[in-house]
Image (tube, rainbow, N blue to C red; front, side, top):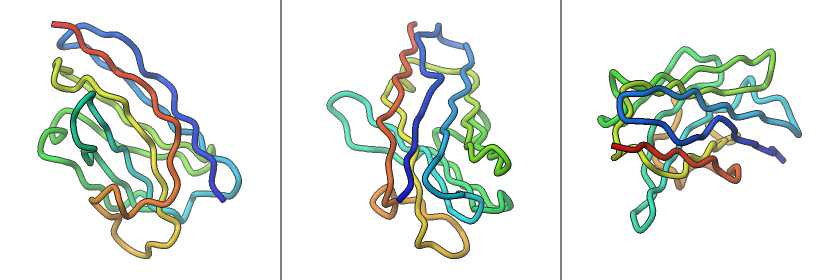
Amino acid sequence: QVQLVESGGALVQAGGSLRLSCAASGRTVSSIAMAWIRQAQGKEREFVAAIQGSGRITYYADSAKGRFTISRDNTKNTVYLEMNSLTPEDTAGYYCAADPGRIGAPARIGASYDYWGQGTQVTVSS
C-alpha cells in the first residue's frame, strides 16, 4: 500500500509559478514510478508528467514541456512538480499517482497507476 498526499495548489495569476509536492508513505517509493495527472472540471483526466524511480527518465505531456519540471527526492519520499508560465488552461485538480508494478520507464497513461492521492487544486486567473 502507498498513501499519497499532495500539497501546494493555489490560486495564481497567469504567468505565475507553483510547486506541487506529493508526500508518500506506507512504503518507500524510491523504486516506484510516479506521475502527475490533472483533471479540469468537465474534462477527461490528462497525463502531465512522470518520473522513473531513480529519476533518470522523465516524460512530459506536450502541454507541459518547457514549462513544468517533475523531480523527486527519494530521501524524503517526495515527488515535486514545478510549474512555470501558468495559463488559465492549466486550471485543474492535480493528482499524484504511483505505479509500483512497473519496471523501467514510467507509463504515460493515468490508468497504469494503481495508487492516487486526493489531489490539490490549481486555479490560474487571467
